[in-house]
Length: 100
Length: 233
Image (cartoon, rainbow over all chains, first blue to last red; front, side, top):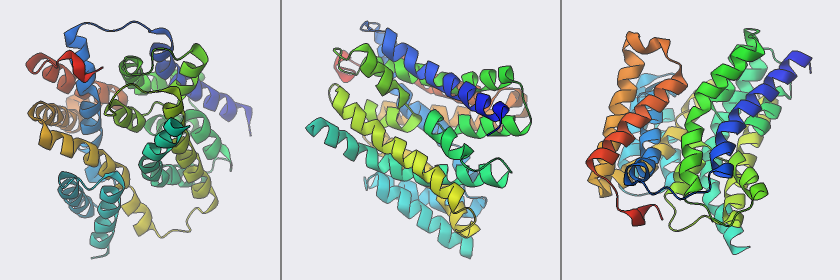
């Protein structure tokens, strides 16, 4: 493997690890501010929502299959069917639509 | 040991969701002419999606190390927030080495699933919980590199939606049970859509847009519906 690519990967790995590692390793105090606590409570849902929309529409290279997959996923997610089941039906339904 | 197994079990859906994404990563790297093995090496050492895709496109453009570092730090700044959040939820007695290990496995998905677990997160639980997704992510890329173009494009395309299906399986049920969460989800989605489509924001990197959309939603929720202390403990 050439040197440039190897160093690039190391730079990438370090710049991915540092933001993950620093707070968890060195921040040992308990956060008492109700605002920060609330903020941290909502962050997971906010991140996932921002990751999903509108990117889900472009996830399959076919906007119609993506829309159908998205609706099917929301329906089964609403029915509390679990992560794996929802992911699989979303894939299957968008696959079927892409064949039409 | 029980906690370790429990963690592994919680990690399985994440690993399954990762597989198609990291598979496509492997396919992309090899098909763009980079050497065989590079993609798997990247997946094993980076364990992140958007950062890896961005990093590879920078390599292909022969970007400087400085540009690679800046872009990656910007894209990955969200992990800082997640890591801070998890620092409040992990077992306080974890030592430095254990913290160094656990933090390697923080991703959007492991963070979200870990956050919604009841109680504190022990080291054995977290170990199993990150190990399985690491295996899923790395092996997906390995298989993608090796079997590139073995799967028909139509199937590869459909696989792209799996990860988002998983995200929806987390946010939709939570939103159905909690009005504050529903509103946070809607605010963040709206902001993400605004940042995506309005050309004014195209100067920002995708990582920065993600942080901004996340903060809009989370700050909105924290101001309008402050949570009681017991939720985070």
